[in-house]
Image (tube, rainbow, N blue to C red; front, top):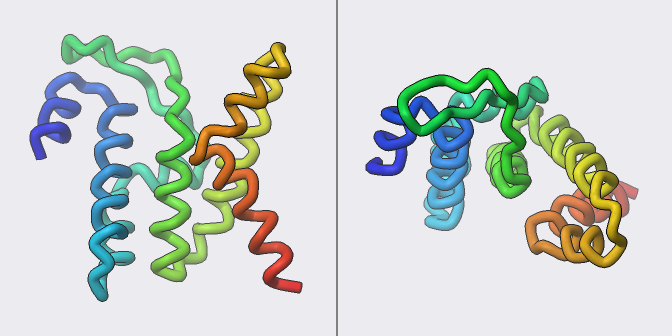
Length: 140
């Protein structure tokens, strides 16, 4: 709650979206019967941002909005996909596809092969890269 209040006070939309994703992740980790619906509810506006592919604007940390788009960490997309999938929400594939596209774009922008390999080895990035592949094979 304190993190959300601080993000609101700073007018930092990207931070607000990360706080929402962290709340969703907590709900999923608790594993209660209604955890998936609570996780989706916690995501709130984050889902619209991810489903529409909008990049949130940044914040200066002084209560001023920054019109410059900010790249959200890919773990936010992964948590959103997991929450939607757990809730059997029809938006789950769109969030996953958008996240995988972002992962490809970001990795393509890393010119050094070793650095790109390290980027793709991050647990969340690896999960995004392999998640859709596993779903495709499971559907066959």
